[in-house]
Amino acid sequence: MLVEVARVDSLAAAMAKMDRSFDNLKLCQQSSWGVPKDHPDLVPSQEALLVRESLHEAGRNLTNDHDQQFQKSLLDAEAIARGLENALKAGQHARANEQFLLMQKSCKQCHAKYRD
Image 1 (cartoon, rainbow, N blue to C red):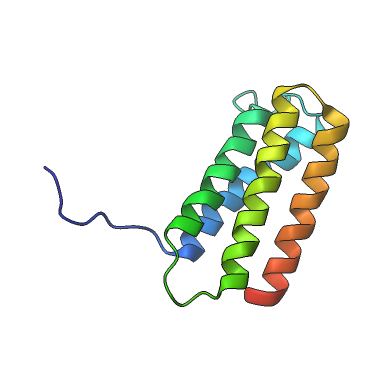
Image 2: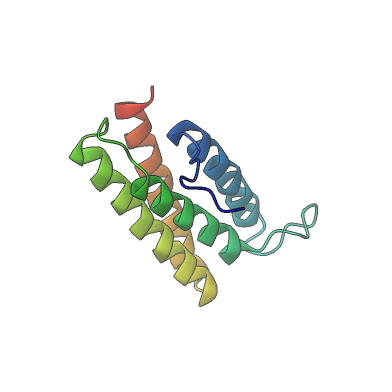
């Protein structure tokens, strides 16, 4: 059955879901950007893709309650996630580490301003 309006999760719910993918990325990084032995279902580039897509969709579904700086922060974080994803696909682990650190910094800055 088709519905007239699709229900979209709240931003907080979307961020919580993305946080799980980010935690999975941490596990992959700790495994030198390989598949963690305890989690054979995790593929580093796929987890980076999930984070990137989550950021994209979060930005696409924002309400007018969020200022332009918040929107820019999401776009910037999405670009970093894309860089991480591309580095992982190319097997560039040093670049992946750089992008991962940038992503952590971006998240912390945004959370300090908008969440904490």
